[in-house]
Structures are given as C-alpha cells and as structure tokens.
Length: 228
Image (tube, rainbow, N blue to C red; front, side, top):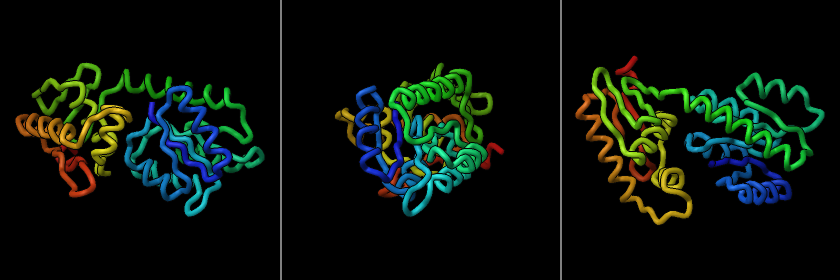
C-alpha cells in the first residue's frame, strides 16, 4: 500500500513516517504543498495524507487542484483541532476524511484502514474506462469496442496506473516502485518491454487511445476524445 505523506513539520513527519513503514506502508514524503501536488498528480498513490497549513501552497489548495485534475486517490486531511471551517471546506472539496492534531497513532492507522477498505471495495466492484478502452483489473482483460485482449499482471498494473493518471505523465521510476516494488531490481527496460506489449495489443484492437512517450519524463495516455 503506497502512501504520500505531505507535512512540513519534520518533528511530526518523521515519527509518522516510521510508524507507517513499521505497519508495512510504502511511504513517500513531501515537505511543502507544491512538491506534494507534483507527487499527488502522478496518480500512483493508494492514499494521500495531507496537512493543511504548509508553505508554498496550503493543503486545501493542493486538494482542490488534485480533484480538478481528476485524481481520485483517497485523501486524509490533517487539521488543527479548533479549525472547523477547514474541515468543512476540505470535505466539500473532495477530502475523504480528516484527523485533528494532536492525534493518537492508533487512530491514524484506523482511519487509513477504513480508507483502504473503501478504496478496495470500489476497485473490486469497478471497471476502469478511458476513452474507448476498458480495463477489468480482476480478469486482466482489456476491451475496446467488440474486441478483447488478455493482459499479464504487469501489463494490467501498468495500464491501470496510466488510466488513473490520464494525461498526467507517469515516470518509469514510479512504475517500478508501484508494480515491481520499491526494493526490486527492475530496470527501465522492464517497463519499456511491457509498455511495448501493451501498445501492440491496443493497436491490434484499433483503439483510439494510445500510449505516448514524453521524453525524459515518462508515459501518458492520449486520445480520450475518441471514446467520447
């Protein structure tokens, strides 16, 4: 389970990071709003923990921009205990839950487990669509019009990340961290190989959606308008 933790106060951030890692979460840290937004826009995270009061860009603005960009990752807001208005604004702008500081570690973990259950139930019962392609990640099946293709687990994972990210590029490093694992020995060539296989299947299906390479950045989907 991959978590993005956006918190500028180091004395709070580091102990919570250690707590999450101890409980088998993979954690990326961001210490200001702009960096947090850049990370969140990749769409590779399962949960985002987002503090509100941060330098460069506050958490509410980060949340708003994430939702406007189509990022549906569950967001847990960290708020000051007496700032009720922040909680209301956050929930109205797409936050899934909030937690007032100071909080107990066990409460944080319980909130995260609840968000995971909510997210898992959506994925289990849902099918991803983008433009004229549809992915069933549970049967590893890609569909376009009246054609279907079987995918490998890696292909399905890569395509799921691309569909969730849309036109926002996903780097090879992000693919490796999410699909192969943070501690794996996978290289960029592994990503390139599976992307190539995906492309061939999409071409054979005559999909309007294609995978484009953005040099020195990563991959993204294009052609969603063909499925409109």
